Length: 322
Image (cartoon, rainbow, N blue to C red; front, side, top):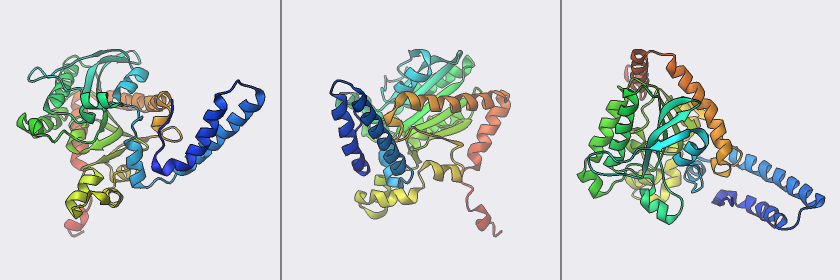
């Protein structure tokens, strides 16, 4: 698979072209050695670049068009997936995928955002921005999982909820609020993985869980850098400046207590190796599920409630005068 090069990855393109040119000829020992040497050099360059990403560069990686989406994770992590569509109130929303599957021989429910790759898919999936019926479909799946005592896995990757008039007419804010409330009450384990963008309430509506995992180069924020810049400075072009202040990277979020664990990605980002990324995430999902299953339903709900109550306590000491 040819990988799209981001602006800051330009130094990699020359080496990639050399490798591609050599693979087009019949193989011999000399060419194989040269390809191996160039591949090692490419990995070293990627490791160097990705070891010091700025917040804005991290945003670009999180939005990469070839980053794995929920259907990719379903393919590599789950078996026997059966998709469930529609919210039984208005219609189907392809921006959210839901269904039942098997995870390490356990029946589970899977929910996640799907952005789409080419133009046709992006339009069908609405660029991963759900409307109210998408959130209500997700809640329908969660209630079904709760009824049949199946753990829930949520994969978050959305710029945010769709802001269109039709979505507002059908109760976008209410749908998000109800999901947040109901997820806090569900008795089965809920494991959340932020795998790309975690945008505002559009992400939080399927991200109230026992453990919040985040991929190494993913972001999670109350607003996009462009939206923040447009509000603060009336200039979306200052998005890079906004990204620096939003504390949206995985390391920032872990320090603030908003996520529980950072899942490492392959060298050069998750978009370079979907299967390897899924294998790395698999370990963290298994461990998180095991920790959640050790609790009784009552303990699990209380722990989840207290977890989210603790968020936002930064600065209380100053306010209390201590």
